[in-house]
Image 1 (cartoon, rainbow, N blue to C red):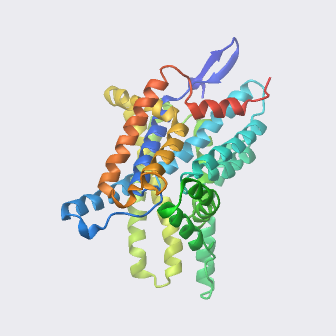
Image 2 (image 1 turned 90 degrees about the vertical axis):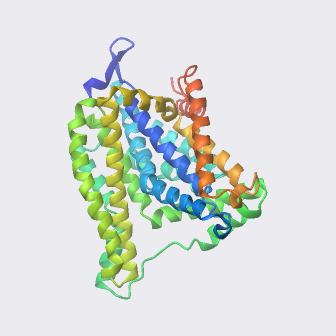
Image 3 (image 1 turned 180 degrees about the vertical axis):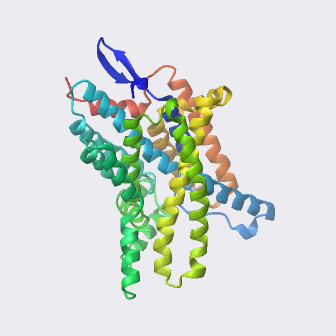
Length: 399
């Protein structure tokens, strides 16, 4: 990591900020904003398609399929990877000062939980609360050897619960995959999104909504995947793999990830034709979907790194996302507030008036407004509003 170190205050060293990581954060949050808008922020209520012209139904389907192909399960994964990367930078900076960051980071996770609850008050499927809970894995593993970290990350990404369920289903035909019952929880959130006042919606979102969201994350393998990505991001930081000097490694990664993505996705589509047991198909789909999304994420990351480090024009274009990426938490939380106001009953209630195409255009508008705000804000301040507050509270009481 020597390429990434700079002198500060005499002989004290620290890591420089890695601009391409902020670009990747910007790409991830942009994808999240667009996806959340076409989903109406987890409020799957849309205008009647039969009353729409055929061309609009076509664009609705094309936008939905394209965005989920490009960003579904990938934007979130990039965001999680960079969470682990950022932890490494912060932890290593403190180690170079002779400090142990683990206790301070644990407090930082408590703060993240509270910030996540603010976000959850507006949007049931937010991820910050889950990050604050799963983030403990970074505290527990950050002093382990790199080889052990790679093994742990791989185990998490291979979905051990799904693998266990598959083995049980093969050995015992009467085995039933346990799932957390959430239908009543989702029904409660949908009812409030449809008819509730602001305070009614907040109350349901913070309890039923969060329980349903965390249960969904468990049932769909997101808990282990997130832990694996956190650890992988920490390894990437430790090994200096975000730097230009590792571009050959990302080239190899892309060459391996592309055929793997095609193979795993193809297998996933073929499963129902060859396996009769629907529960086995479901668990295999969870495993394969998780893996091929990770492969596609690796393609996105390697592609962005290649363009940023090897083409000046693309570097200049991508660099416009740096302020947006540096304010990723502010953007993530405020897009939840904006989105719930636009689509939920407590606000404008446009869920049954804006179709997918119109919602996609709203998402682009929200992104561009946020991008403009970030560019102006970062010319005057070193951190975004929420990022600055998080940092100040993280170090409260420090000498």
